[in-house]
Length: 309
Image (cartoon, rainbow, N blue to C red; front, side, top):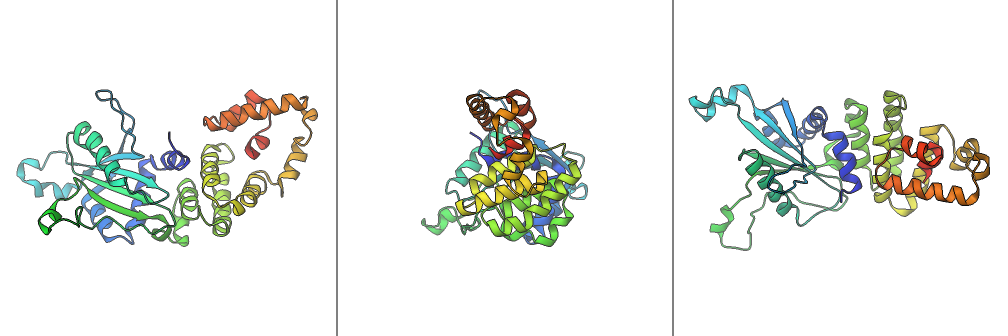
């Protein structure tokens, strides 16, 4: 099953322009990543759908792209390749905690997506990490416990590591579009309720202003992710703050419920039993990823109450 962080990460960064902005910003503190960017033309970045059918197999990488080599570098491969389209594959994998199996996972993606589907093109796998635990990059030998001869065995791709917590300064966030900015803020401060409150509220305000309240899906996806990430003591206060003050203009959930008539099921023409059933149905639909607007239509509940669930 796709986890909450996979859903919102993909919904934002499957847009090549946003992934391009992410990579360029991260490269400012990552010389190796900058070297890669210098070798390709990011304007040619195109998504490879991660779900595909090939002999009954399915790929499940967070995101995968192809990108072309820069025009002036094509002759390096020889005269016969000057006019050829030289592609590079990119696999993006988002992690919220260290994963000892990530290399095996990436090798599997590389084999299915880049070796077989794309007929074997050079690949850069990029791990985008926003956890709090220390997780070293993958520059050491694959078999350090073996004799030196075996240290020359390497990965079938170049592996780059982006730590969201240290790769982006707060001042840089203003340079991103509102959708990218709110996603990066959510990842950067997902485990720190105090910092999240300070930085997420302005990002949310900018996002809502830019979208004029017409696109709440990303906010829903991010809120589900944050609910699974925040410490228990931070969760209730933060969710109250975001769900009411910023999104709806109320200071507390109680104020919102009173204004919407949610504190009394009878005011909506529902008995207590009917209200309980409607809320249960709404929760199930939220788990299935159905939009708040559609849930409100089917359940008869207001969008404000659905968001408090």
